[in-house]
Image (cartoon, rainbow, N blue to C red; front, side, top):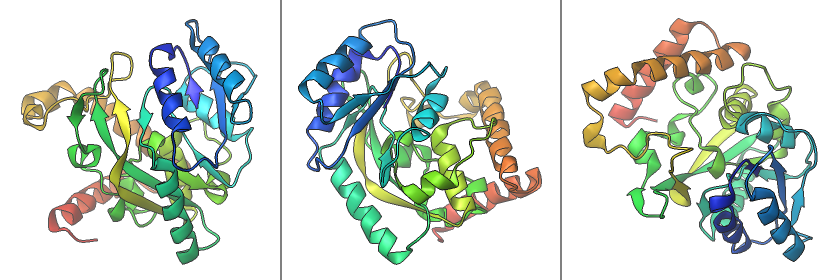
Length: 273
């Protein structure tokens, strides 16, 4: 878990972890220089659960991406999950993710595997905004079979990811062009012939609030031409940064990237995968 000024929702998230149906886990936290009561909340939970929670002590990293990647460099385990400070995990999240991972490792042993799930998007008060983030953002993990496909989309929300040790090894060393830890890990896994699998069930309540809003609270009826024009710059900059990660992994030309996006959309439209 990467924390930074997360006192408002941190307790709710920690409680959801402690309520998991699977209790075979250990939480590592690194705080990135919070100035609110985040540290005090972590300390309180550590006192109650000293065998379950560890606060890592090293300098601040300057953002969620570097914070998460820095913890991967310091923690060794069989499996890993990224945990945001302001969401809420459904009780069966870890159990179902582990079940899926175990089944997939039997099918394709010895490779990096990333398992992810759908999310329910909620507001600050946990009122449902969108029941399926996958449906809303047209995320289809089943269409991403290999590294070539990842040019079109390797969108996996970090807080839903469950990945094995080989996948972690595949994503190192960390390139300076990494835009987000979750994208980088998925791209590296696929580039090394690993696999991406999705659980078509929301296992996280993905909280949207003032400091983390990603636009998923906009209704589909509002995504019209005017909206797209207003957000063209953001979309353009995202694609440039995403392609830089692909280029760092020797994906190929920008034309190959654009062709992959077109092919991906056609496959979705035709329902072919």
